[in-house]
Image 1 (cartoon, one colour):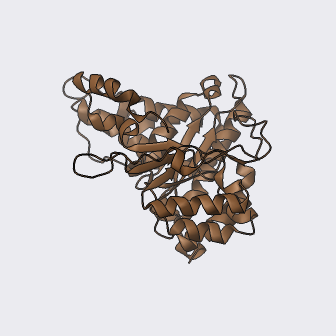
Image 2 (cartoon, rainbow, N blue to C red):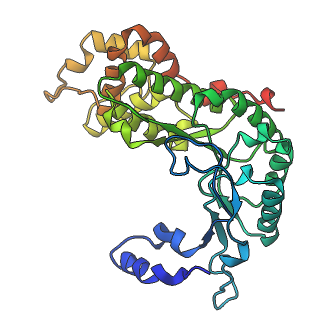
Image 3 (cartoon, rainbow, N blue to C red):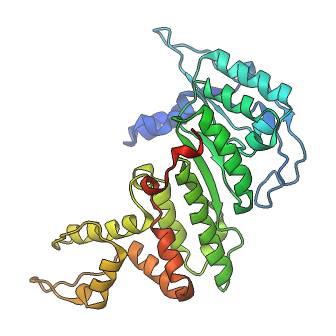
Length: 333
């Protein structure tokens, strides 16, 4: 059994420094452990790339904390699982352990995500989706869509998943930025293209994305583009309501409002912005003698368009992907 009170003094110290206690809820409200270890995927960026199989690691009771407070309430009512690839385990293993989790009656989450591809590859895929639909899951279900080449599998799995879980929040990690270099322009463009194509698939199925950047993204020709896409994609309030273009331009008008400029349209189409830009709207002084500047988010988008003039129309199409326009329930109903 883990010593769950190890961090109590640390949390108390941080609260005394002015931080909210809820910031450290992972240390206080969760039983944490592995039910299985290992993976079968051999992803080159992963610490488990040399693993070949999944094996049982521990029993749930070994780390399930039963401590209760003075009023009889569980101190740690939630469960976090850190398994590498739970659904790729032998059916007898994942089936029994998933049932154990359900039997606790506690909300739980596989924090590193589940392998969505297994729903399409395994003969038990529908059983997996149906069984997970009956769980008391904590937060969004998390999967991964790391490779564009997996699109056929991901879409087959999504049809199964959404059939059994049409209203469950579903999030996909989107790996990116791997092996980027300063002069690798085409590799950089391909990576950005694949990010937006994966996002388009997820939007079509009513799912959200979460960009996971490999540290190599720092070496990309325009590394800040990864940061801006992540700031848009990883915040569901933006991702669900705005295209990347709308998010970028809203950053611009937000800055303008903060600087005291009059803003008639918080968001405008790119074509309208381009006309204003080319006619010197952003170079003119206002009555205070101040000039509008282009904010970093919008400038990064413009730099990308300038770097790839041959892909300009394609980039603008991708930057305008919007969930409300793409979502299509007919795909799984």
